[in-house]
Image (cartoon, rainbow over all chains, first blue to last red; front, side):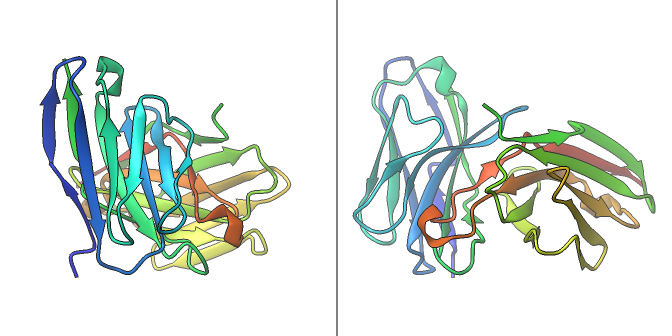
Length: 113
Length: 115
């Protein structure tokens, strides 16, 4: 099992450009999450999907959109990137019920200039 | 609004020493408290977790101590090793179905264990 995979690993964008971060899991998990990690801020939840077909805002959703394409895939889109969105982005998944352990992908390092 | 506050930001320990990281939470409805470990260039991974019905949980060299009245919990790493050098995050959640496992993380502690 690959677990949680994310693409790309690195990306540089200019202000105003758009891009989509891809995430897929092969553990048959119901719930998926997108976090951003900034120094001194820990991990902050951007959006989550409790199950296929549902998405909800987390702590810092402004400037982002998500799509739960199917049970395996959960994408994060930046429509008009801003320097404040420079961060490391992590996707995670969990069963959503019973076990509360979240499994994280390797992350995407995004720089917006 | 930071609901989980973690300290210290960084910690340097000698090999064989005890590493202690502290967290405090505000929301008394939290009832699941995990610790995640993150190595450079990797995603976080669950290390150990506790529910508030116990005051301590031990797994190998790692122990969580939980003080419900003070709304605090801490991670103790006994006999710290250079391989323990990583960033540690505490977190809190609601262990019920409708929370869908959402976690609120602390700010993180960078642990360096010198040989």
